Image 1 (cartoon, helix red, strand yellow):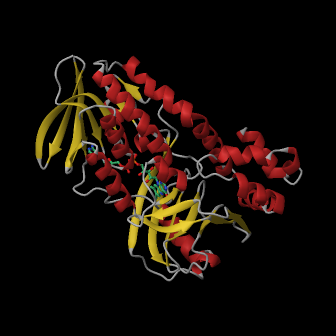
Image 2: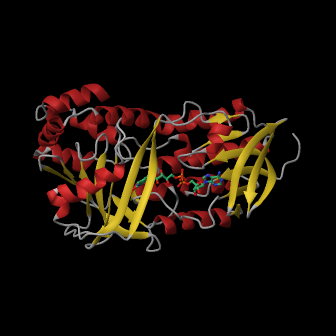
Image 3: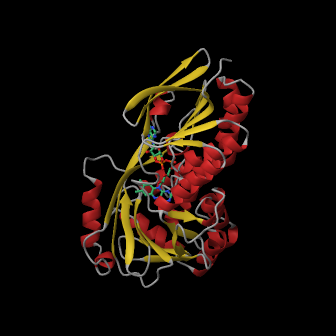
Length: 402
Ligand SMILES: Cc1cc2nc3c(=O)[nH]c(=O)nc-3n(C[C@H](O)[C@H](O)[C@H](O)COP(=O)(O)OP(=O)(O)OC[C@H]3O[C@@H](n4cnc5c(N)ncnc54)[C@H](O)[C@@H]3O)c2cc1C
């Protein structure tokens, strides 16, 4: 194979790109990571609610540098005002500053000898005689950089996936979020709002402290109504929220949540990872745990393939096989849960919440609830001792997803 500037180039220095780049460098490759923006972690489209597992999957300790709050449970509110309290009884997730979190991961990549170029955007990708030629705009100048493997970690609107002929994700949910004054007496609980107030997905409040929360929603619907109108409506007409919301906002986030992974995440000389590949939990929209888990595999496979001088699609398919073996089933089940929940009317959602609001069921959720692997608790809920407490909609739910 011809000489190249780098063994591996990673496009995008989000949490997934930084993790992929670090693992490629740790596996012995000469790695460049490029980031379009002039600042790592900014702007960011995220609530920053990371499960404890997501943080450890990124190989970082939950430090004060990025942890703003700790969360142990959730209150799930349905349209009729019913509330399902889910108490994990210990810290289950962290609310983080994504800016500081992303910078921590980028710094770890640089510490592992990854070369980082910011203010550098990938604009074209060509495969010429087995060499990947990436055209970039670096500080205003167009340049070509070559490598054996390119990893596309360029987020929900990935250009690398399209340029490599791998298409796009199945669907992208519009999401919106403000950071605003909000009274949270239980700052270690998030609130979720289901039903027609956030059609097809859910709304949330995620406390940073007792006085400020991230309040947002994502929706999945087939009409033209803007997601911001839904958020405005929820802030005004949901009496629980309006009694706690102090008005105004200090931050606004708008972004897309990709659901349904790409059918193929590799081609000759290219791997796609993270949001770019649709490796996002369809039940929550969270993409850090799944993205980081896949990024480690992508980094390792890219480095080994480059060092073996074999960047063929067949060699790189190892990545696709390994990440699907790790999280593929969970994503498939997540899509089924997402589709089922999206099809419920308000009264059915109320019934589902009521059916789960019983001590044995809540105990099972406390013991087995797992933000990253919802299938575990669903299987436990269907055990004979629990299923006699569950009726109607829940039974239909179980039938649809299992
Ligand atoms: C409203 C909202 C709330 C969310 N809340 C959560 C949450 O609480 N918890 C959670 O786990 N997930 C959440 N997510 C999802 C989470 O933000 C993503 O899954 C995560 O950021 C994916 O990381 P990534 O590195 O794949 O992509 P990104 O973080 O999007 O990083 C991609 C990077 O690539 C860069 N880039 C793009 N194109 C190019 C190019 N051509 N050249 C060079 N660089 C490029 C971008 O500038 C960006 O820095 C949320 C998403 C939304 C929209």
